[in-house]
Length: 135
Image 1 (spheres, rainbow, N blue to C red):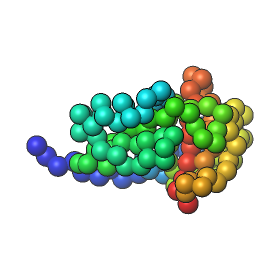
Image 2 (spheres, one colour; image 1 turned 90 degrees about the vertical axis):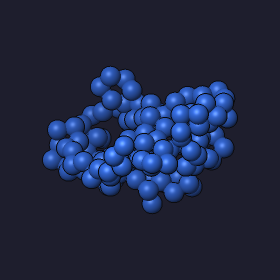
Image 3 (tube, rainbow, N blue to C red; image 1 turned 120 degrees about the horizontal axis):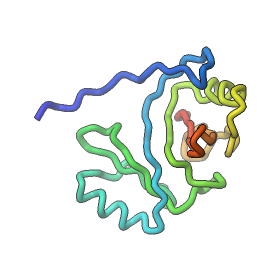
């Protein structure tokens, strides 16, 4: 089997604006009433714990660390559990572009104690996206 090669961050244009953003990673967020059971099951598929804040656990492939999935019962500081997380290189620029587009901001831009700056936005299909950068 060939080793997995890292993929360079993608350059994207946000909502048709002229803001170029590097997407570093995309992680599905799964609501789970039993995070420990989720960790155990996905461990059978080869995932290992990358982060555990108690209310959220992120699992990653040891071979391809960018292959991740998060499980949480609720979000500690936001009103909803986002459907997915998108890590970008400049969350402030994306926030301004998204606000300018008229998209619904579900959770305002803020710094979190676990080392990210993030906001939530509703996409055109009703999905909530957690957009973040690490501090």
